[in-house]
Image (cartoon, rainbow, N blue to C red):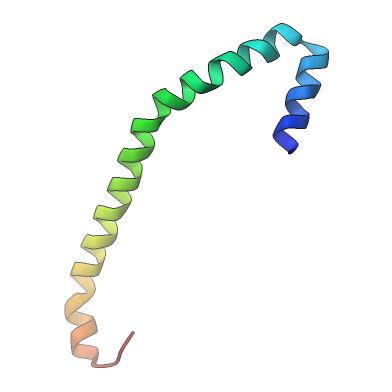
Length: 65
């Protein structure tokens, strides 16, 4: 809602820039999508490695976590 109100404010003060932002937003989202997927994948890999490294300590502790 706040983003929409900011866009309306931009539309009132500088309508060519607001229309350019409206047209370019899907293009930027499509370009950023692979980077977001790589970030999600790397986060999952590092979480798995962290769990794998902590596994011996969790097993030796003997209590459920």
